[in-house]
Image 1 (cartoon, rainbow, N blue to C red):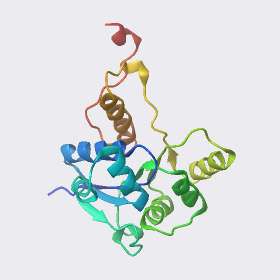
Image 2: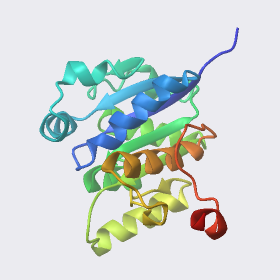
Image 3: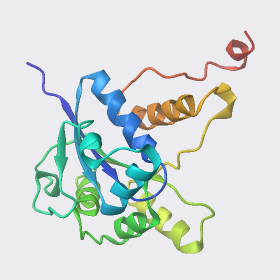
Length: 194
């Protein structure tokens, strides 16, 4: 019996809830990953506004759901083995908290645990333009081993829909964890011309 790889998915209040939605859908289809979801209160508002989904409907996309306020959850301990964590989307408030080690909720605590255990942490930061505080916080997280991954579309693939752009971005993030899901990939200029 094979043990599923675990991935923590945090959702904060920045725009881009579609990235977490699609990631959870693709991971469910993949079947080899056990997902652990934590949503901040502003994240719930963004999900309702951008996706028209209720909290309970969004919860159904994950294998396990943890309360944002439950800093005693399994995710708060390094002894709970995971492949790492993705925050999708990541607000600048969450970025700042992670950069400064301010673990006041389960998303920031799980991110802190991910870094201290030297596991992969990916922050899909949604903000523009950046100010100096944002840039310094991104540098700090990067120096601690985290990955800053703003979800920018790849136009070289000639996407025909928002869904294609989202799928490509999500597949690139999952690649960082060694999880391969079906998505368009760059095959070089010669292939693109054909």
